[in-house]
Length: 385
Picture 1: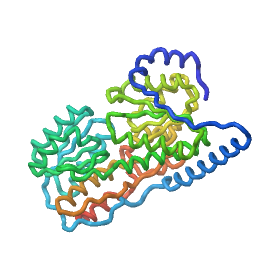
Picture 2 (picture 1 turned 30 degrees about the horizontal axis):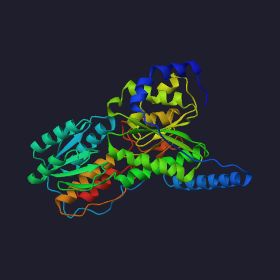
Picture 3 (picture 1 turned 90 degrees about the vertical axis):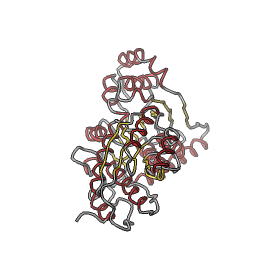
Picture 4 (picture 1 turned 135 degrees about the vertical axis):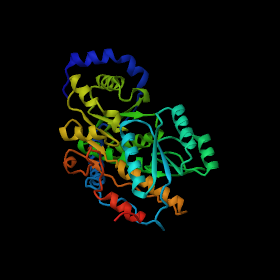
């Protein structure tokens, strides 16, 4: 990796206070051993780990073709029901809300969007406002049950069902389904990225993992990523860094990242547990004179896909916000018909420089994955042509 020393020192000096407040230093590394036999054994283990990682990643390199569920509704849904979506206002959340609205329209229902923010107080206030609208259902993403516990109790009293994607909680009361983008799904994504990091680094990864701790569900990705890296590569290193929610989308975040890299000049990978976290980072490290970094992580947003196309970024998991939104609306429809919740994995893939130009995207550049997802859902819902 090549760096301009003066630029790196300047960045490190100007951002030390920010980094001290917002970066944790939980580090893990493989051990080294001495002696010819030990070296040979270590090399053999590294080769075996890389082969296993490569075998794992291969199954996620092609575009999916199915939405992952095939059981139709028993009857065509009753028209006119109201769904309310709690939208944090972040980039990817806005896209999810857009598709909540589209899915509701496709099934014959109405949709109302409310901004929920990223703090417990804002989320509780938004949930209270949603309940006051007396909808048939409320859609959320990433808000822990514990944050809105009293609101869920009130919703249950009023007969309002609640559905969440990206949730660590178990179903409880009004919250009847948390299976979509569940911890198991996040763990799979963590393992997918780990496989790519291990193989692309040829067993020499020195990774900085940046974690948005305000959303507990994201930490399941980080935990699985770190574990899988060390499962396949005893010589690789991963250091975790906590990112405050308040710094998302600000210069404080890019300053934190460049400061971490300046203090750890052997770093060759930056991994983020949300695509939105990375936006602006590749430009910031380049401006600091840092080259040779591979960048990737969980849930590519449109700027991350653009970064892959330009060569500035390296790998992201694909998260089809349209299919997530439709799965949540589908789950509501099944609940209204007293049908079982469908606990099925989401269609996904690893997005790399090799396949980024063949992705199925919407007109705005958001990842879709399955080209005919909309007609597949409409067929299950007994609507459309």
